[in-house]
Image (cartoon, rainbow, N blue to C red; front, side, top):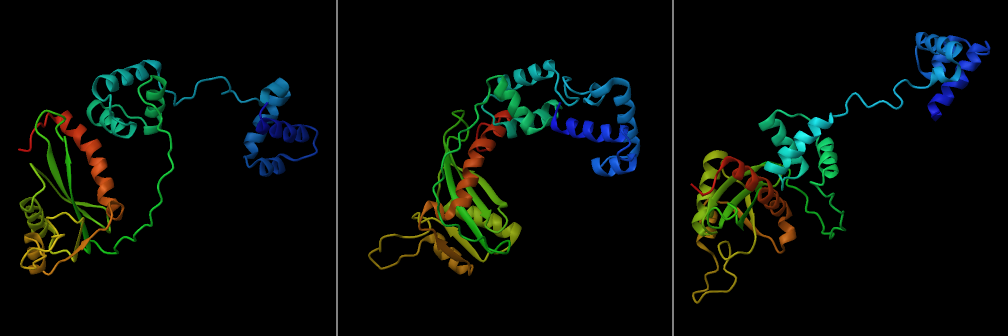
Length: 270
């Protein structure tokens, strides 16, 4: 017997010996008087065995059928072999009409040898910069060069604009390379859709800042002059960790966006 079943037996025995009323027993067990009467009847008919849960040894009503587990495993193996449980769960519902929780899918994939639980590694500690309080107050910008089309086309760069306050992706565009033109185009699109931001937050790439003085002493880039003309501040991060939000978004996009484009047959910038 489990501990709960032993507690139940003790209370029902006291009720049977008339040491405890059914009302008091119901309050003690946090059950209704009707339930106490049912237990008492079962105890008097079957003894201690009558108070053992009838669900013991039976499969849960929520247990997935083995045939469905096999079907899920086949689909994931053939179509989503490199997908994590979260993304695979979304695709099973979206494309196959199979609804189950991420944790249930994770357990199935582990059982079938299709997913290996990640070992938690100690994370390097970096002081966190507080998010800006308002949307549009600070926009982090970055370029993410990568094999976005997995060899189906040339490598290219994704230009990313993300709001610091909300984490919202404000602008995404593929370009052959990270250039002044690519950021100018991204800024133009941002201005047209969202208006003027207060500040931009970038790294120290030569597009944003001239790191060695030129002969005439000019240290402002073409992009920097455009931003100044728009009365937008530009802040340069001293370390990659300082712009960690956009770096994390880049990693997520390199995982999820690549797989979404593969499923949709997208293999070039156009």
